[in-house]
Amino acid sequence: MADRIEEGVEKEDMDALQTLVRELRHDVEAKGLKDHDKETRLNSKLDELEEKNQEVAGKVAEAANSTRELKDLKEFLASGAAAAEAKNAATAERISNLELDLARAESKGAKSDADWVESAEYKAFSRFAQVGDGNLLEEEHKVLLRSDSDVDGGFSTTEELDTAMIRKIIEISPIRRYARNRSMSQKSLRMVVRDTIPEAFYEGEAEEDQEGQSKYDSEEMFSYRLGVTIPVTKDLLMDSTFSMDGELMADASIAFAQKEGNKFILGTGFKEPEGFLVNSSVIASPTITAVSATLDADVFFTVQGTLKGGYNAAFSFNRRTLATSRLLKDSQNRYLWSPGLDGPASMTIAGAPYFLADDMPDITNSAYSIAFADWYAGYTIADRTQMSIVRDDLTRKRNAIVEFTFHRWNNGQVVLPEAIKVIQIKA
Image 1 (spheres, helix red, strand yellow):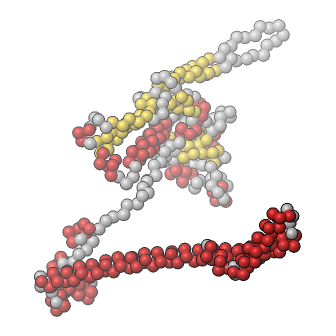
Image 2: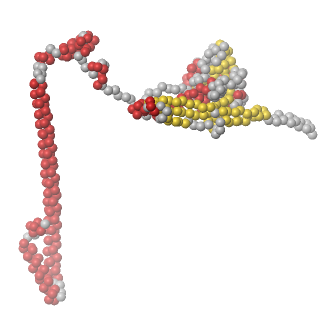
């Protein structure tokens, strides 16, 4: 740094500066006063030197940056040379290996071009190009490597497995969604039902009124166990692309919902829910169609008159009955189910809402194919527990089989038969 400063400052300037400094010091020591003229010249000279020093400092910084860039360039060139040397070494080794392979092939008597033309493989390929695969001879098929024959190369190919499982639609009757749902903490649940109310009478002045009272009944529900056990090997649990334990739990949940929906409609009530189409009071006085094995439009209006006005009712039938209902016409030749022809399909038929329940019977002789009911008032579902899961790794441990057991306790029952009306197809 000192060398670069001396290069930027001329010698006579330095001598003049030193002379001024000595004179100023002498005057100060002798008189104790400052010579303003000399001080002014000194400050002026110092300012000039400061400018030159700034210029020198800038040049020094530029030189330092240039030095670092030169150093980086040298390191880059050195690393490139090393990489090129390594690549050349790898290329030389590969060439050496190829030469060794050629030498080994020659020592074993490699075939010439003429020999390959006469080989069975070449002849088979030539015939394949001329006449196609279907006209190859049996012996020519054998010399081909192909993916559609396991022993001729098919074993070496791999399959790609889709990560999304394609699942069939499982139809579930959604009675639970519309019925009254209760929770129970004990084995049974008793519900009180008011059958009648007191009858009131008009009386004359000063006459004694008459006595009356309400009458009550009860419905008792017992919880029944719904369960299934699914055995699965540990190999499948470990090696399956899908999460098999999660798939099993999802499948069990769907199976439970499907079974419940079926039994809420068709259950016998013996160790299982009571279906509303099995309840004797519900089916005691059905609305019957006019023609055998045929659905007519009139019954949709007739059955609505059999239900008391205070109930919030809806139709229920399966999708095949819905398809037939959409073709029905009234006396003016208008479709009974008309909104779907003019715009988005409306969930009403004959002015009343409906929902699809696949477990409802089809339109056949004597079948109760359609129900019209206030499901919340007429049918109650009681759940004692949610679904429980038990994983058993021990019972069949010697077979490396794991058993997944799923349980839940519930029941379904008609509690108010007058709230449920049915349409029966004439026999």
